[in-house]
Image (cartoon, rainbow, N blue to C red; front, side, top):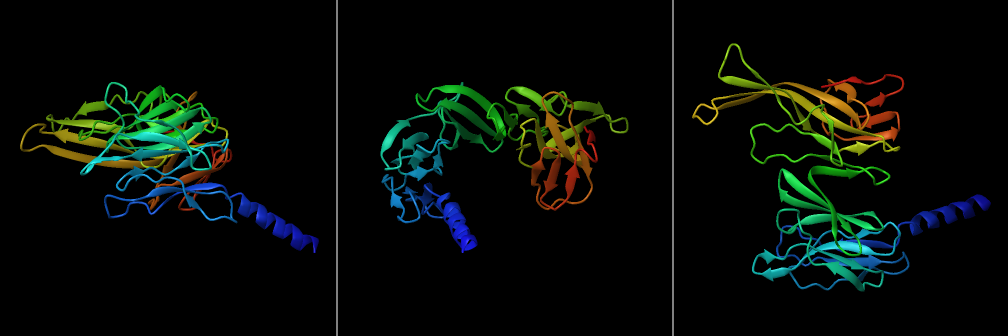
Length: 313
């Protein structure tokens, strides 16, 4: 009987841990303008209720709950004309659905305001907004969660906070439509991988003097994943060489070759290390099992203690 009672208690506890929750119901699919709204559910015994009643055509970003559980924040773009949406607003509501405050715009440094972005809580006092500028560039703004003041701005992609929320790992900005993209990983404003990035190593071909070869170009193929202790980031990188000839002519040639895939392990205080991966990777996903073991989605494991990683390009 005690075992049964304990099992029921644990089941109820796990079930209760799922609440309260905030969700976006009836999100936009193929139909536009959409009519999605934010719904809140306080516990399993009460149905979810509609917290927002924005006009038809408004678009909402997924709601996120503050770490202390007191507020819900979400992004909102209002329909301001046929086929036209407002800049991004960040709206805060409490668990009754009452609006507490809103930021009517999120300014991007030296540019305009954010039109579309995803919102997250960094901690109880800071909000993060990743604003899409073009397919190769986002701006991540750190805002004061009370005043809306922009505290920091980071250009790039793949933004991921360390467990202690002190370091933001990300790929630096890329030039859209550029012939060569050499990815550079940063922790906040500090470049950490590859060494010396993003200065390309360029060599002229002896057999083809008109051809320039860019050696050891890097493409980040996975998310940037922090170790549990927040000291290292793991990622999958494609390292390759790139030949470019005939720039600006009708006979321009661009060729990439010598591809090598690495599991890269990057930290702020030592050169990058990692492992060469020779098997094809269907999904470039990984996770840390602990601070010294990494598992790929394919089921391959890497033990940093038993088989130490080696320097990589």
